[in-house]
Length: 165
Image (cartoon, rainbow, N blue to C red; front, side, top):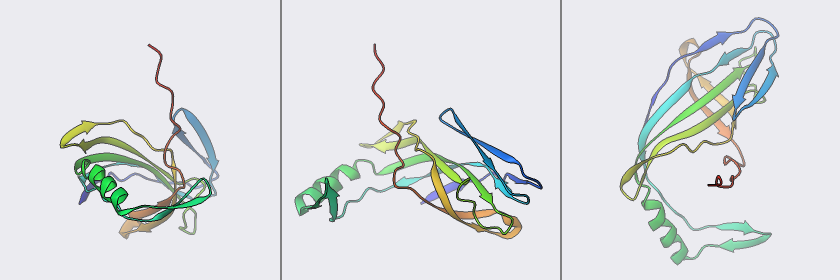
């Protein structure tokens, strides 16, 4: 179960404004059509994670690979070492077009792990995903975001070499 603390931040834009998004030091300027709505909070989510593993077939260098029961059992045992408390932030920007559809070119979410459980111990973390495209939004009364969907083929930033001593 995850609980979210959701601050509300809603800005109505009446003209052709730009929204500036800063991710990892890179700034993108996205032109917005008149009447766009920008929702831009940071949400902290706390909950309990449970690791699982299932059998399946994946593509490995162009060849199908199917997991064996032994591999699934090993992966499930490893995943279970992460069972327990976790918390992370979801820093998102949702841009709604004047017709209230999502502007997927300007709507993203970035997750940052604050802590997770590893072998029974709560462990601090700074892992941060790359920006992920928000593909849909559900609005409640007063245009408050009640949920959103997102999609990406790659959430993980490139591995960087360890700093030299």
